[in-house]
Image (tube, rainbow, N blue to C red; front, side, top):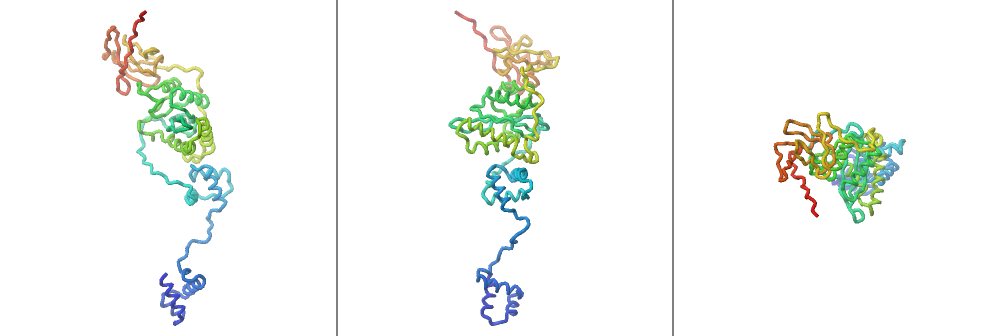
Amino acid sequence: MGERVKFIAAMLEGDEPFVELCERFGISRKQGYKWKQRYDEGGVEALADRSRAPHSHQHVVQAEVVQLVVKARKAHPTWGPRKLLTLLERHYPHVKLPAASTVGELLKKRGMVGRRKRVRRSDPYKSTLRSYDAPNRVWCADFKGHFQVGGARCHPLTITDGYSRYLLCCKAQARPLSLPTQRSFELTFREYGLPDAIRTDNGTPFSSLAAAGMSRLAVWWIRLGIRPERIEPGRPDQNGRHERMHRTLKAETARPPRNSIRAQQRRFDQFRDEYNNVRPHEALGQATPTSFYAPSQRAFPSRLPEPEYPSHFEVYRTDKHNCVISWRNIQWYTSSCLHGETIGVEEVDNDRAKVFFGHVLIGMLDATNAHMTKNRRSFGSMVRADGEVTSRKPRRRRPYRR
């Protein structure tokens, strides 16, 4: 810039010819006339460098397309560029749309993209959990973290199909209790049929501290022929696709929450319809979960079936009051979740046997560890499948006194 100012100053003095002046400054005569013309049009400020970007090019995004992208983003503020483009392709098939990276830059320039948080992920866990290779092979269920709705807590129960990501249920509950949860699952089973397995975490009401982590809800699933699957504690990545759905659910339905549980449930229903039928899913090739899901062929039974055991098993029914069975003339306490249920006993040798409920191994009986009580009745503590010993003993009934 300084050399250009000196060149213009020497030219204005007029002491030497223009050609010699250009040679002294090391520029061509054409370039010298260019600086002279710029100075005549705009003064010294016009000598500064100008943008070298072309005034127009064939890949520029039309203003109408930009308006469509911005409008779609406002309608779906949590959707990314790929999902927005898929939506626009459906409604405007003849419009030439830009690339996803271009859409991202357009949204960023208009302040419509927030800064993403860095997420640290652990290595993938190799386990015996079933793969999502077909619809209804594995359902995923969990409670979304509670939040305040109209002065009360809301615990959304969510159920999805692992293969198609289809959101089967999103029910607002006041508390994560067993009975309302079972009722929500029953309505889902009646509408979509029974899955092969249901994957959950280790919280209430899906699991408990009883033998084999049994709960009343898990017992009900096993009697329906459903295999309960639980991820390891502290490993939500084993149920990652369901947790990812929770992130979208929270962004679109709980920020901000509604004024009442009923209004919140209506928002959940709207989100469920949009999530299944409208929102493109990147893991499905930008298709919708509805295009991949089909109801199960296993219908919900009218009568709850009993567990079936092999012919070499001994079948017992636990006492409805104290949850014990009698094996080898010894009273064995099983679990409070199994009162009145049918269990199978498989003998290992003369003094030991394995205890099953359905296909689930819940513990081991060892007659050598039984003991006598004051009323000369033998009681034994079942060794659970996780290695712990059941410590609760049946209470002796007191005789009736007038």
